[in-house]
Picture (cartoon, rainbow, N blue to C red):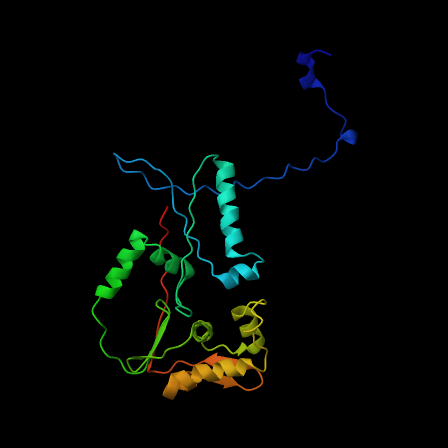
Length: 239
């Protein structure tokens, strides 16, 4: 049979079989685009700020030192001869704030320093009575005075505030706010009440914004004298 006669041959339908379409592989996510390098300069390296505290690393089954060593090894494998230097950022216990912001400020990141100076230069806010819950700065003030919450106390209050009006079961608080490896600090459904009691004691006359739903859990109730300032999403630096 010549090639010219193939178009005139009808295949027997009895021998046709259904052919499944080949699976479509989704496109890989685009790599981050670095901002254009100014004229007269050249790129000599980069800084990667990693925000992760010792407890988060431990819950993932790794120590900070092991994580640093793995990243350094990956760099030299990808680019033989590349030089690396690692530094660990330290912060006072219970300082609060996003881990990566603490790291950037501690390691003197220029944009983080500029933002910090701007915040310090802002005029003091007018006195305001009532409760101000600032989720951006992770601060709570009562009639103009700092409530002095610990990191875990603020986390507990913030969790309830972000779910305003909904009763949160004790088991949900434990699962979402305490890592399984935090043996010494992890409460059970009986001792979670102790953490809430400490939080309420620091809220003073406004303790009833954290309401107990007997036999279930806790709920945040906003009053007219309660102000909540929500966290804004920062824009990425490298895109």
